[in-house]
Length: 349
Image (cartoon, rainbow, N blue to C red; front, side, top):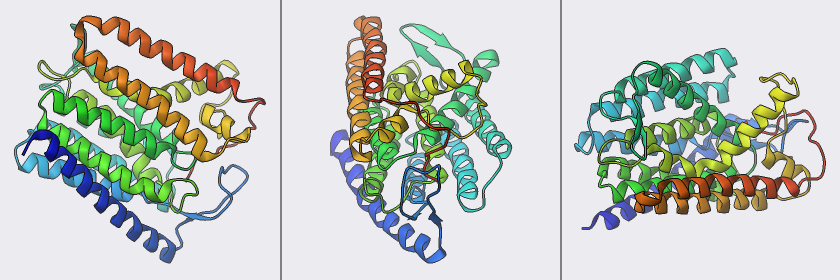
């Protein structure tokens, strides 16, 4: 059996399992009354069950455990992905069910990020075209902050039907391809399982969504993508930059919204609807159109990532093309909005 066939079987099995588990979570959430009830801050109009992303978490953690037990990767990568990811998902689940203050969520995320960086400090780094940042000392602190930022930005972007799921499909497909190309079987199998789980979940989350992802999975996805990127970055691996570039739509949208709010003196932690995807929906574009547009944007970035890895002599021109394309896509999408957003939060909770 070839590596590609093996990976495709993992994707198929995870997709079937993901759809089955999401359907089970949907029935359970309805029975327990775990509904996201619309209010003036919501982007949806119908009470909708939440927590469907638990299926994504379960499948991904199971894949990490199996890959470790089969010897596809060692304890450092397992500890970083599994222990840190389980902590982030657990805190997210508590927030979905009972609600947690931001201080407790951030504390757990920083602990998870610290665990991941400490575990990976001896086996990985962050490199790009011959340059490298160690995960020890100042480099480690910066990396922890970066992981926490990725964890939260993915949560911020889970605000309309399908957008977080489709972005995850593209990013995990790109990561799977890059890990296969670099012969990293363990990371490839985890990324493939994540891809399948997201496909199974997206069946239920595409507009009109029958269930929302919830914080249990949105933060988990941001954390997992960040740690997967670092885990695969070593001498014979792939730069974390190429793994993360497909997430450019989410990174750009959240970063611009944050900088804009700081520039206008707004409270950073206050609820808002200033993300690009929220403004597009407010201006009459459907959830599926906005989600699909972000998905196509991510797919273009994923293509550049794979080309960038395949042609190391063209690293900087391709990286520059990715930055320029992201800026152009953001500018074009912004031109499709006509009015300033109101101060409310449209995230799916």
